[in-house]
Image 1 (cartoon, rainbow, N blue to C red):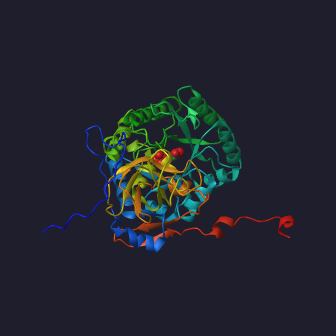
Image 2: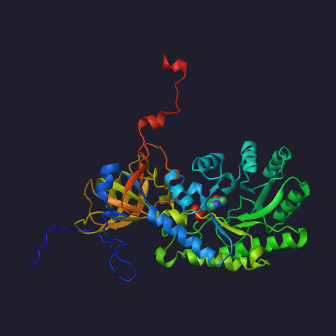
Length: 450
Ligand SMILES: Cc1ncc(COP(=O)(O)O)c(C=O)c1O
């Protein structure tokens, strides 16, 4: 005999747009009570709530998938893990164990890569600012260094003059490849002729060897043509370097920018229908690079600095419902213990927010807030959810990219981060902060402390 259905209190709700999708089907919600096979309650008991979890298996599998997709199509390939996307040591070490070099954009990130045991000649140093001391260290260690602007070129030449060898450098190109908005602020503009001016200036200066070209078209780039076009333009400049100046570049670095399985707020369709696969990205890039006139044995090293697409889907945040309330306009609202302080990507993503336990009651449009006393602390503006009790858990995904590195100690301390391996073992990779962490650098001047 089947179990009697439980009693549900009747309720009346005003009809609101959003209750049904365009096929007149009610929006569905799922429940999930495990992360990478580990029960949510076990994780909360170990690390508290909220807590970020990284799945090692996903990190490894994505890295292998991208590497293999590129290696099938280009003779020499190297991934360089984009540190800023998530520079927790444990996460970086998973990528390095998979053979990825480090891609860094500051002295701090460079030092972090060194601390993770990355040799200096396996660090790609990008970014709009590198100090004199940082340039020196990178040159001495044979790092791959991409120059961003003319003032940096001049500083690099100044440092080079003091060294016994001529340092190798690359140039970061800024090019029009259809990605919108165009990232105009980095590198030397190709189409205006600025990039060629930089080439002539660098070669004419005689202090540096030009060995590479770099570009990064943007982030969360869904259009494969942007990569095809960018790669073709980079290849075109490499051809010109060889034809006119007899320079054969050692590497072409196409940066990062691939989308993850997240759905942007501006996207109507679900990400399964919009996000290209890693293989499609690899194909677009190598298609574009086929404009390069070189034999396979002379092909430059193809470097990719993919961040988000490798790490985002590996990250899940467990959060807890702190309160449920009615807003003046009648909407239901939930207050979670995780807000924009730890979910930087909630400005752009419509995160997948999944209740952990089968809730009872009628789903209705719900707005989800974080715990901050700030009106802008909105995790999700509108989600069809059944009523969730105080203390209920939800999973928020994908959150592996940029959230941990950009999380703030604003009103709340930052939560723990843990990693789960293939066997289902888990360990903390950054403990939850305490007040001591917050005040560690503070001092009170003598005139106030007496
Ligand atoms: C130079 C450079 N390389 C790589 C990346 C990583 O990009 P993504 O996480 O979109 O793959 C970035 C991010 O902005 C970047 O600026």
